[in-house]
Length: 276
Image (cartoon, rainbow, N blue to C red; front, side, top):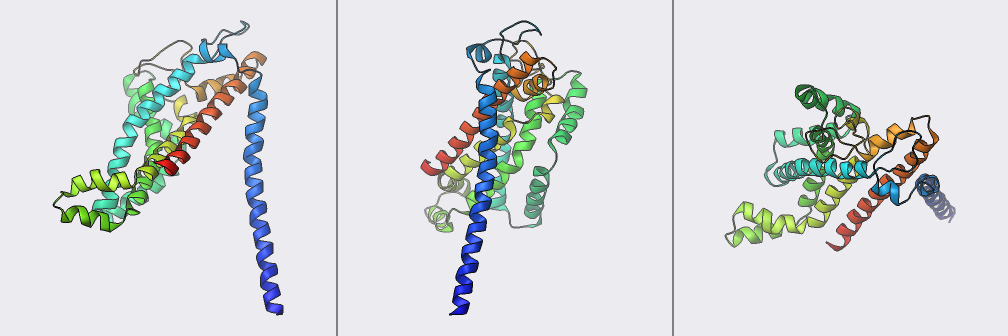
């Protein structure tokens, strides 16, 4: 009887501690979101979303070029990372089973831990220094490198969750292995793979350090991938460290826009896993 009471007491204590830990984690997130929303709401207006930046002392202006630039850079990164990440994940799941397989997984894990600023310096030396100028392309390459580990490991794990019986049934019908992967395995793991891709996009959407060495920034409209381009993280960084109150106010508005983009992407990732 005494041992049973001790076990129940220990169980309740541990449940309480874990619930408290979860509450602290959620509270920290809500505190950050609330702080950004309160400070950024005052600067959020139509001009901020539709106008170009103005010089210091000139009222108005916005970050429309940075908003479009972020979408372009993230789009370039997605176009580069998704095919490579999917291909690598398919290889690990469907054609692996050797030492090279383990090496790729290990390197993907190591790459996910490389500081983003190191990736930015690497791409700077790989592309920017050879081109002689900053560009949206180099920014997209830097972000695509950061997206790869998440896409590779998510694709690998999700494809492994597809029952082998489905593969065997397709092969028994005379379907080739590649057709089985494309028509049976990938559709079965579509929800999880889509979630991994969207989370990878959300993960890099707010990165600033790589863009300091690659896309760099641009106060004007630019949609060229071979020229410097404005992005929300870089614009936020520039405004936040400035001594001008107007720019600091716009920094909070930019932070709110960037946070909203990341939240929307995360919500889409969760919904895609639930309904895909």
